[in-house]
Amino acid sequence: MSTPYAYFEKQIVPLADAKIGVMTHAFNYGTGVFEGIRGNWNAEDETVYLFRVEEHIRRLAQSARILRIDIGHTADEVATQIKRIVEMSGIREDQYVRPLAYKSSEVLGVRLHDLKDDLLIFVAPFGPYLDIEKGIRCQTSSWRRVDDNSIPARAKNTGIYVNSAFAKTDAILNGYDEAIMLTHDGHVSEGSGENIIVVRDGRLYTPAVSDNVLEGITLATVVELAGEMGLEVVERSIDRSELYVADEVFMTGTAAHVTAVTEIDNRPVGDGETGPITKELQQTYFRIIYGRDPRYAHWCTPVKLRQPVPQA
Ligand SMILES: Cc1ncc(COP(=O)(O)O)c(C=O)c1O
Image 1 (spheres, rainbow, N blue to C red):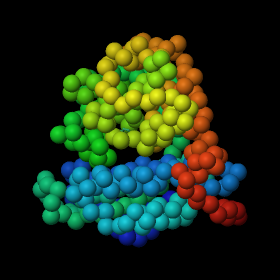
Image 2 (cartoon, rainbow, N blue to C red):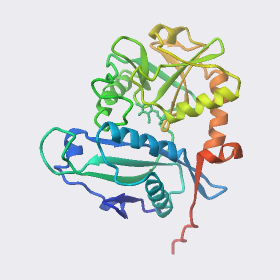
Image 3 (cartoon, rainbow, N blue to C red):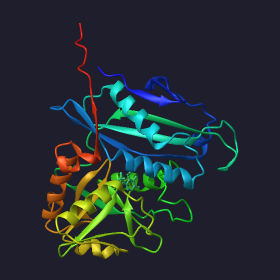
Image 4 (cartoon, helix red, strand yellow):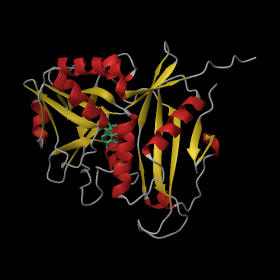
């Protein structure tokens, strides 16, 4: 049995002991920013490979800047604490690390200034999020993606996830697996927790960063891999109807990995199966994230777990 640990108020404590007060500003007003980092369990190596930790910590810092949150730790310090809790927790399966920087003052009043900030990090077991084998069915949501001048999607802010939750729950309750949200001017933005890529005539298209998307780290990974496969990737606004005529559509995300979208709004995407480009990118990506491709070792931070103590 593993005991999950957390980094909380500058100490490592069992996750069960990491508790915030009910008046905590971030809990009341959504004034936190966070990251999700995959820890991919490679049983042969007895190692958890943390994927692109540096990039996640950099994005956390960017989100914090937008919300005027002082993380109070250097990037190296954050990385060190992440590795410590992963090692101490000893979770021998795929897992998810959640650093969260937040307004920690226990006061009433909506604002971003004159508040204390804190950083917490926890780790939890986390298996597949979407059906990677079969692909997923998506619905264009009636909920529009929040605009940059409302809550910037570029910042991974806790409060903005209400927008994602509206869309996700509607999609699920309507019998789909995931939502695709549009911008206020009707262009494709992103999923509730994923970026979106459209394949047409062998070229990849993904919404412009100004179309209210989170600047995805999995997306950046896939763009790099696609480039190495000799595929052109174009970043531009995408019409909703382009989804209906695409050869392939897939989503990327730390939780979602690389997942084919096989149906959108009751229309099959391509032939309704995972397409060849999606499949090749998936295979390369999965080799990499489990630390099995030495060319990309620099994207994987290994945390070797100690042998579990045999139970008496
Ligand atoms: C809204 C949203 N878009 C996109 C992504 C994908 O980003 P990444 O690949 O960095 O996890 C996520 C997940 O983090 C997300 O929550």
